[in-house]
Image 1: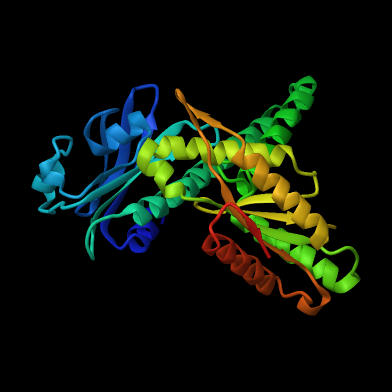
Image 2: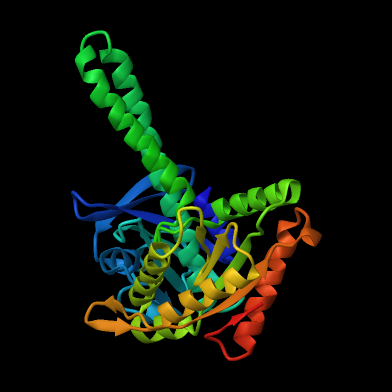
Length: 337
């Protein structure tokens, strides 16, 4: 399912998902050869996917046969002709690389920066899905173990239940959290925004405000310092902002370098104060990566719920998006509404 969706979304001829076997120092994948599905393995660091798995860096190759890292063995066996390759790492919440996703031959040209960003986002979603599946398996195994041993070792039941609760909490957290930044993911953000707007429409009260936040010139960070540096900025910015918010605020990664913030019980005046404080704080903070300290600025679009909006949360998003566009068109590093 992941591979089929990736191939379609990326408009590519083929896609592959490789996972790292840390104990053996290998990468592996299951691929179709005729009517059979076979498992392939190769050393970590070998070939395109192996290099991405080892370094955690994106590789974008416009001409496969001109790159010494490319292994044409698969083409020889299948008759497939590889032209261009885009391969990105799959990273977990701790920043470790668990595998790589590779797409071959974009149908309408070469893979560009937008394709790199899109495939990186797809890889993040695939990582969450795989880790969710692993957690589900672990939960199922633990439940079976409890059923088998409960009559024999009642004294161990409390500890096992604690483990089960921890796994459930971990699973719930992964399901609503962006793997890289540890901010909430877009799906959870949309659910909470719908709930908040519906509550205000029905019961009234102090309005809520919505912030759309975009990192200025983020592509230059990736192009100049590499995607790992870009990831460090995203993760550091998220940690910084989350440390300054209330427990009731909902801060989420909306997509790529864009974040969103729901501030309940915050009117327009209060939202302006908060937005400018966050903007200033981000601009003054250096985010460390390797031996470098990187600084970025952000543009913000702000919209506050009013009774005229009723429960139309999409219109509220549209207002905040329009304000963000205004901030970027007005020179960036500013708050608009």
